[in-house]
Length: 87
Image (cartoon, rainbow, N blue to C red; front, side):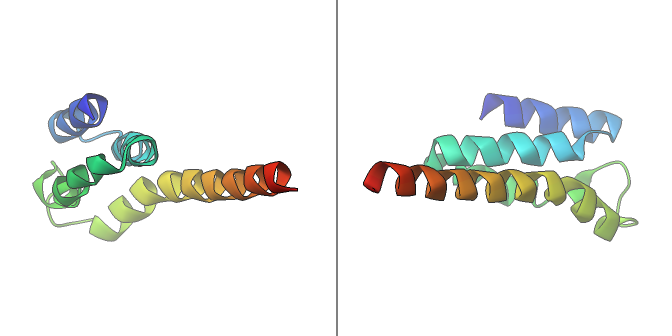
């Protein structure tokens, strides 16, 4: 959770690396579900960031695609592991 917050602060200062913020936050949520409380604040990043209101759609596309790819891989690996151990 601290790494997610550190990356979010660095994004707000420098305006780069939004994809890393959401990827680390997604990994944190898969490790411990109580870290879902971070997502409320992370949804404010495009509004608080240095780019302001312009480019929000591009922000979400660049930020969420790596996190969604990780989640899809995590889901597939979990299903394959469950199938291998149950049979």
